[in-house]
Image (cartoon, rainbow, N blue to C red; front, side):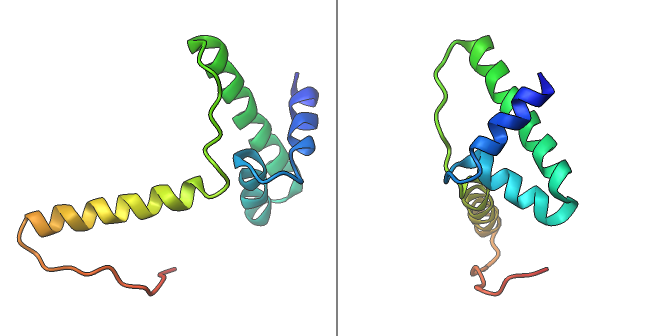
Amino acid sequence: MKTMAVECVLATSRQNNRIASHRKRITKRQGKMKGRIASAHLLVTIAYNILKTGEPYHELGSNYLEEKQNKKELKMIEYLKKKGYTIAPSEQQTA
């Protein structure tokens, strides 16, 4: 099953989807093999959830994590504004 999942991940390498972007992101930090295995794990997890719930898979997009991070930052800013602080989001990226 591991081999099949890795082959499926390699088949998505030229596509613009969540699994391919996950593999690229992990590969940059940890290497080729760990990126493949981590993405295969993501693929198996997605397949398990499809079988468990019976709901079809909805592609979240290749920039899903960036959008999620931006939404989280905006929610944090709104929370602080409700508490009485004045905060404006900065355009500068931190390390």
